[in-house]
Image (cartoon, rainbow, N blue to C red; front, side, top):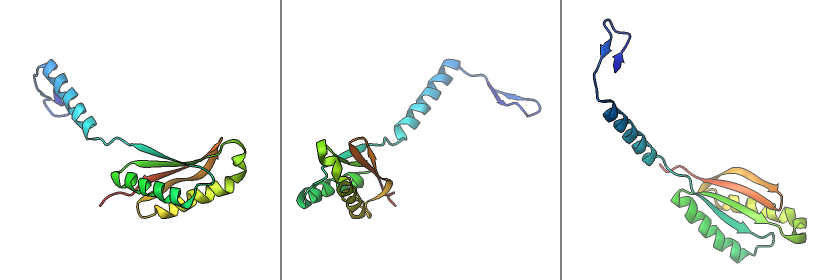
Length: 126
């Protein structure tokens, strides 16, 4: 194996190729184990979600963000409830303001089909 090709004379090392491959594979496995996996938790709201239900889900959202998981909050409109788009947006914005100290809003509420979706990422720990 060539170690320093630009040197005069070039530096070369003799090694066992199978052992070299094994060590490379082991290093890659260690790097892969060190990487953190992103977990996405979901919260579902209706357009007419009541205050108590909202607070209950808010506590769950805070717990998820403290654990380091991303949060996907969405308001699901079924049937004619699509008329209450404004209520759904207000609900998600209220959730965003409540979660300011726990996470950062990645994407503002946007309507996709029958769902209005908002993503929240946890704040970095110091």
